[in-house]
Length: 530
Image (cartoon, rainbow, N blue to C red; front, side, top):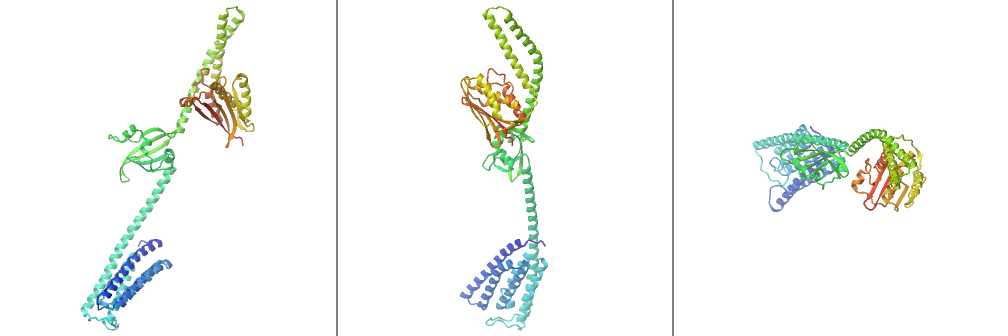
């Protein structure tokens, strides 16, 4: 016997009882119609009263099943039903009554809610009631209802009707209990399958949500079927977005849809919404009742590519360092000798003015080349970082004081909070500020404006250098921190690369906003000292 919980049984009982009420109410209307318009040998009023009582008792069943225990309510309901059916059979002629088939209704109800043996007991009880009533009326121990005119039933007919009722009640009990138990067993199996499926789906959803990769399935037209939270954030998905148009270019989609078949684990990389995504796509057939389903696994490669770029840059810098060490020995000493010799000749020899100018050019260019070599060597070195509590505003003031003496035509607009402090190496921060201001001065020319600020934003101290120079293109911004890239003819392109290197060592962030022919603003973001 497969047992259901009380709520399920109650819902099932209410549905079954509604059907029984509808049947009894239909019989009541038919009996009323026949009694009003046709003459019968049955007493109409008792039959109508009995059917009305049956309807009332069944309506009471809706209340009983809510206030009593279910088995108690069902037994009480079945007992009332059979008593009312027995009265109806009595009023309509006993063994000759056309209503004795109504005993089948409580038998079927018991088969729906009770065990097979209990259903047999109900059928036996129904036969006993019917047989006892028929025997009493046949033996004249129970008088026929007054006004009911019946011919006496022969003994053979009486016995035949009893046997047929017994066979009918027993057959209904056995067949209905057998099939309803099968139905209950099937329902239970389906419920178990449904629960297992729900558990499996919950497990599947949990696994997908816990994945570090994005997961998307879509139809051949690109309509999303399912996706996890990571994929939704990566692709900014909703049901109206065509997944294929986001993840695949037209050439790649032709490869996926090609007649030659999909390569196992077809892979591509694509920049989507500022993320570099590694996309593995597979094509499945016969799932979700669809001819084709695409399955995408998305891996965020942004951080990996950034680290790879940093490693390549460090390898590049290491190579530069080795070259710089060799250049220092091979160039610096001969260059110093050349410069010193020319200066000696300037002092000791009397030469024409044009030759003297040539000597000055040699000394000047030798000094410039020497400074470039020194900058080159400084960039390849990794100076130790000695952090302490310092004020970016005060460091900025020291750098501005030097620049204002050498560039009197530049207007520096200052807005700084000297009370803001950070943990950093003041010498290296001074180098960062010097490089940023030097670039800004070069960008504005001899008479431009440079705005500098040190302020607090959230939990950060921000140092901003803004100029109204000629700005940068997007290509220049992407190459800004690359070694040997310079926007100025007088530089060798190591200033901003050194700035990035120092800030990365401190764990600080640098932001660059620039627009061609408008200007550039560079902001250094540093955690505030608590």
